[in-house]
Length: 234
Image (tube, rainbow, N blue to C red; front, side, top):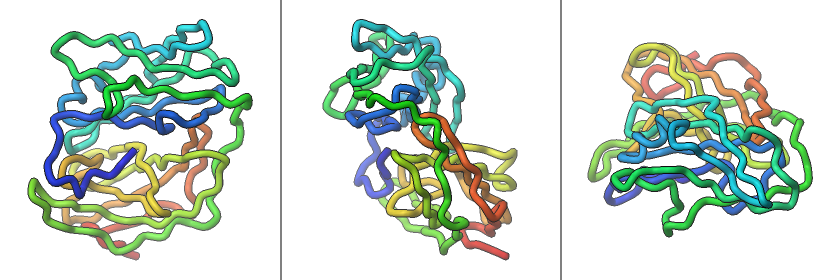
């Protein structure tokens, strides 16, 4: 799941995947898929497009467990296989779309695929320390600003982890979205082209929960973090 704040131009549509396509996953993995731009129309109703994982002589239906609608051009869907996958097997994601809809593909047009390990992941991630709110980022780019609060995190897990960010008190009702940590930092807000949260200049709070590829999760210690705009407050 890649940051796009520094793109010179914003694409019409794109997809990102967690765990990253091409990586090894546990046999009880879930998939988190983000659709940007025009792809939001498919992402938001992915359950109607009959998503499956195909491999090892199996076609495993994927159930939509959660849909998170970002506040700037991005929609996220969490998919869970109907049953555990076979070990040491390559699975390809297939989704039925019509001719006028963007296909769920990698940037090179290939269908995303993963290879399973031979293990079940039942261990939740752990925080080595409470998250630490940092000074935020506000930069102007060609198509719009990057406005993000930053939080430093130290997490231990055997595989990749997302952070479930819950924002309360900024521009309406509480909102939640699964976001990546990049170089030990969580970016909460939006970039030039897309983002999960629009942050106003008022006061708001943030709660984080670490979630691994199998859906095991651990709330961050220390309770909610408080901000005013993109700056941390006591």
